[in-house]
Length: 399
Image (cartoon, rainbow, N blue to C red):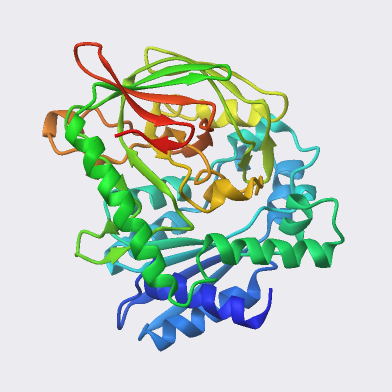
């Protein structure tokens, strides 16, 4: 990744993504190997007026050492001060910028899938609370790495694969535009328009059908549709996912029924779940099967009572830039924005307006998106009287 792309990604993450404020504390999280972008983000944040930038690096191979060698009591454990740190981040109203890339497969290959699936840190749940209560302005942005490039383009030499991945990231992040922020704003205007149209219909449910999928997801009556323009409780507007192409809502966790087949691989912290099929009854995922990686997802879905229920339903059209590349990125951040998706786990309570409905929003320590859409999947809105309204056909909006 050349210096210009690094600088432009950093500026986009700081100024448009997280929208870092003057005198704000900024937390940057990155896996080892992503130092150039982390440093560029720190510099951009200080230029934006940040009071302090704290960069935390993680190492997937240290986690591998835990899964391989630690006792059972270490699985899913984190020291209390790590959770307290999250609480302090909420109290201090920090900005958080995370650098996303697919992990080196060697970090998880051959590990016990049961232990890997159970290793969900309480820090994750504490962080989800900050997001759901809108206490932080945050952004996840794609960060090209050679390891990621080798997975996405395995038939190319690593240097050529890295160059191509960097070009693709620049494209989907709209950095090939003279004014990327203006280009993003145009896209968000379109997604906002679609969100408003979906909200006007007040569908009882959404139905997905085709290519092995026959799934009905019930909706909460007062849940709104939105795109990825968020506002914190203190009024700071930000754009959490870059790139993003989705409109989404919070479903009723008790009313999902049918069978759904994933249309893209799911990457769970380095473990690839392929050929995924999930069967739902009465809102709960009662069967999770896959060609590979099923045990890890089953482990996550059994973490708590809400982990096997839905917390998000998102629709993605064919107008975005990601799906048009026809590339599997092995990164949920990007792949979920190439296709409609659902998420097991924690719901987005801020989208629900009625207090009685708020009490029904799913609660969980996890939030795992997986992709279920494609041009071959028809999406209909279902009214209370059972009539249907076409929503997506061949990836094109019908409303």
